[in-house]
Length: 200
Image 1 (cartoon, rainbow, N blue to C red):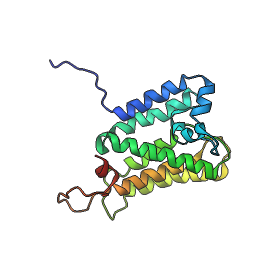
Image 2: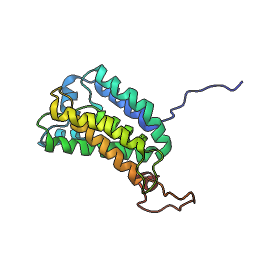
Image 3: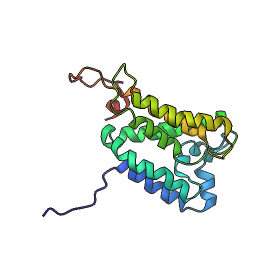
Image 4: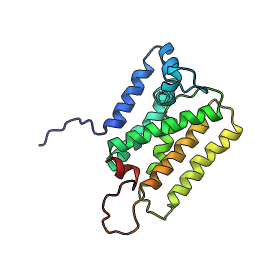
């Protein structure tokens, strides 16, 4: 009988998760200084926070709700696109979300929910082909993004729905960038053909 062993099967997703847990265990003063995206740039901490905020979470429920989805969807995306492309997509999503927070909000931002929405939209485009818009993408966009847009306009719940919208938009953009040709013929690698093909 073959011996079973535990493998570090999804290095980017697992490292991201462990880093977020480690940050949560830091003293509040450290978390509040280095892992929050501020609505303005006024020093090293605010520049670092433009990306590092995805590691900061307000409480265990906030952390678990984000990373249950990341641990569910992330390994599939990492296997499909590769570790480095997925890491780049996470970092780009974080940066765009941090910059959007400066432009559109007057409060701080923390948490990986924008990354979650990026992964949801990216996963919904698993079988996208160039020149096509999958019906599943439209449904996901209406259900998730439409709900977030309504909440952003009318809700006052302390949740950054803007970060969710930005994450979903970047996920859709990455999906279209990596769209495969409609032909079943093998296509050679081309520089700039898509995020995953460029960075693999």
